[in-house]
Length: 354
Image 1 (spheres, rainbow, N blue to C red):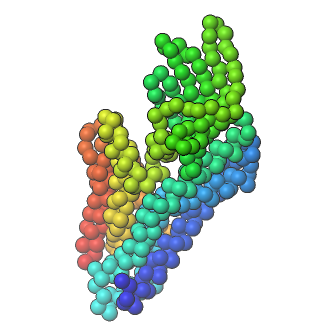
Image 2 (image 1 turned 90 degrees about the vertical axis):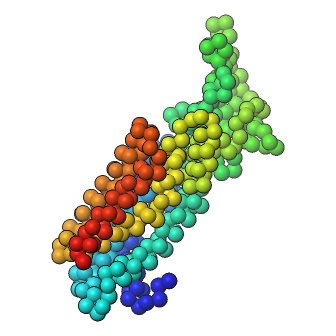
Image 3 (image 1 turned 60 degrees about the vertical axis):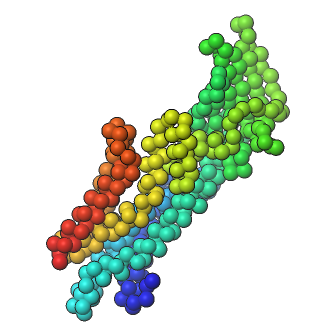
C-alpha cells in the first residue's frame, strides 16, 4: 500500500511521532496512577503488585489514548516537516495537498487496525484478568470485600459479586435471601467454581436469622442452585466500556430482549466500531492546522491546540451519550456527530488553504 518513496517518508514521520506520543502518554498515566493507587495497598496487594496490575491494564489505556495520540502525533509529525519546509518542497515538486493527505492516511490505517485488534482481542482479556487478580490479592485467604462488584436479583435472592476470572471462577460472592420482605439468610463465599454444568461454592459462611436470634455456620463447599451462567455473570461483572465490540453488541441485544435500556453498551459499541472514522477526522483536523492557520506557529502551540481539540471532541461525545437516552435518538449519532463536526472543520480549513 505504501509504495511511493514520499509516502514512505511521510509514514515514518507520522508513525514515529504517534509512537512517541503514545509512549509519553502511557508513561505519564502509569506514573500518576501508580502514585494514586498506592493508597489501595492491602493484604498481599503491595507496591509491586500495584505496578503489575497497572502494567496489565496498559492495553486498555493504549486503546483509550489512541485517538488523542493519533491527533497529537499527526500534528507533531506534519509540524516537523512543515518547520523544515519539507511539505513546501513536496508541493513545489507537484505533490498535491490531496496526495499528501493520502500519504498521511496510509500509516493511520495501520494504527487503526492495531487499535481495533487490541479492542476486540487483547484489552477485554487483560482487563478481566487484572480485575480478578487484584481482587484475589486484596482478599487474602479469608477477607471479603464489600465495596466493589455487581449486583443481581433472582427471585427473593439478592447477589453481590466481586469479579469473574477468565476460567469461570467467581470471586467474593454474597447472597441475601428475603422472605416476606424480611432478611432470613446471609451467605458469603470466597469463590464459586463452575463444574460439570453447575456451580460449587467454596469457603462458605452462612448466617440465618430466626426468632430474634442468628445462627452462623461454615462449610468448605456446597452446591449453588441458580439460573445464572458464567456468560451472564461475565456480562454483569465486567466494565461495559472494556468489553469487545462483539461482546457489547451481544450484551445490548440481551438487554433489549429483556426490555431493559441498552444505551450504554450501544454507545461504547459504536465508539469502537466507528473508531476508523474518528481517527480519520482527527487526522484531517491535524492536517488542517498544519497547512492552515497554525502552519507558522511553534510546535508547542500546535500540540496545545491539538490537546484542546481532543478534549472538546471527547467531552462532546460524553455529553451526547446521556442525551441520546434523554431525547431518544440513536446512540450511533452520539458518536457520529462529533466525528462529522471534526471532519467538517478539517475539510473547511483545508479548503480555505487551497
